[in-house]
Amino acid sequence: MSDSPSSGNAFPPTGPTAPLPRDPSDSTWPGWLGGFSIGIGALMLIGALCGSAAIWGTGWAMRSAGMDVPPPPGAMIAFLIVDALVGVVLAVLLMLGGLGTLQRKQSGPRRLRTYAIIRVALALPLLACGMWMLPANAEWTAHIAQATIDFKERQKPPIAVTQAERD
Image (cartoon, rainbow, N blue to C red; front, side):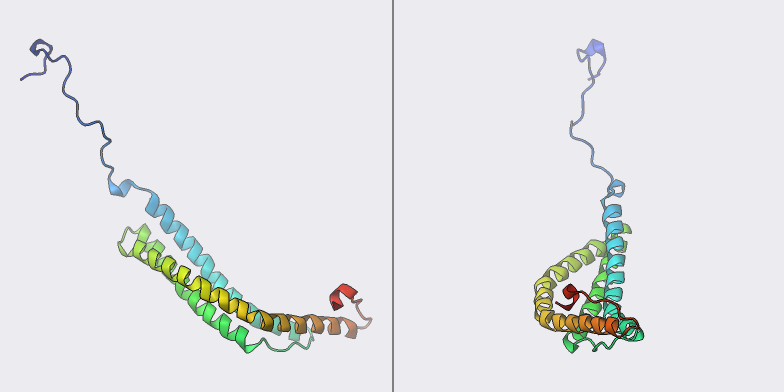
């Protein structure tokens, strides 16, 4: 049967109206998700390393300035070491997952899911550890505040210390 106007069909047959399936290589979500994961992973890595170094840097800087500050409590040091190690591992896992997603490897999204599961599973234990450390942290902070007041009063001439600082 012909589709010419003389055959009775004025219009050729039409195909399905649904859109054609897109080529998977055209999608942009791997680029966005992969790039975002790499960026957040890099920030997590910097935060894990700098956050852990800060506890030792605080005491060192204050002792260098002539303030008598006690060392950080052992519980804080232990928590920060564990937190730094876990943070570095999770940051690397997130960056590798993002890189794999950018390269459209099957392992990329799987690593991102693994990261998400571990991060969610660690949320409550890390919160509990943080709450457990509050008394030790408060005590160490009070020692630092007292060392700062003592330092100000030892200066020639003494630096004024307000009542709010003493409280």
